[in-house]
Image (cartoon, rainbow, N blue to C red):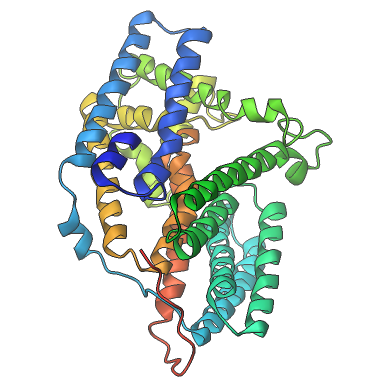
Length: 410
């Protein structure tokens, strides 16, 4: 799909479709290869065949949605955030981010667990916003040594905070991609093919090393374990652990196809409710449905309080909620969503704020195979909503007479 897209659209390798979905398609294909040939799936052969057929057909539905119209009419209806910031706006928005961060960090211990999770997501958004705004100033402002120095220190402290405070690795990966993408679009895109190719290789290697480091040291960083989660950060064990890790998700996908509806009924959308009503505490709504990943985990482990939360892949999640027709329609709509998003970003190709927001959450959407929609998307939506909301304030505060950032060149 990526090759076809590049041939038909003549886009760059940093275009949203290949960047956002490359990880998903590659890992799913590898997972099918590993699981189908090397694993004893403990499901009936007809279920395994059904899983393969559904995967292929769903991929075709996604592709049809992707190429059935460009979605420009819908994309033009979506509001555009401010495209650039002034030096005064930078300081104002940075201060808003820091003050908000202090408030959420202070309040978090005094609220319930459900509210604390929402505050944690907002806190991630505030840290990400402060970091991106700081890096925007460092990379773009000229002849402003004091601003650049303060913002460079701010960015460094935020990155250290990400490394040592939050369990999720995706926010830091998102920030890394946003910065690299911003450098490419501002500094590299106008150069020759050798320079662009060399930069692309540098990006791939840098993100691979960062991913290996964050994966291999997660247990040590967060739990104080003497042994890293996947061995040495740059070991063969750490590298090979990236691919087989999805095998359990594919097994859960086949398990879901085997159990539903033969033994259990469809969820009829209830498994997606937590993603849209995450801000409603269970103390106020005790019977709020559980996420799809939690439901399949209960079946997998045979207990109401499973020790881990599995994901049956996005395909399995659609199937569990809406059956075969829902799976096919859902993948078609996913293709349309990606197409509209891609058209929206192309229409506003000079909007540096919009591109930074998108690049920041790419790891979340490229990692959908690791968790259900609720666990993999809520955090991303909170982060990008906070960042765009703070950037939106820049258009509401009169800060005239300040140095304007250069627009992002497409």
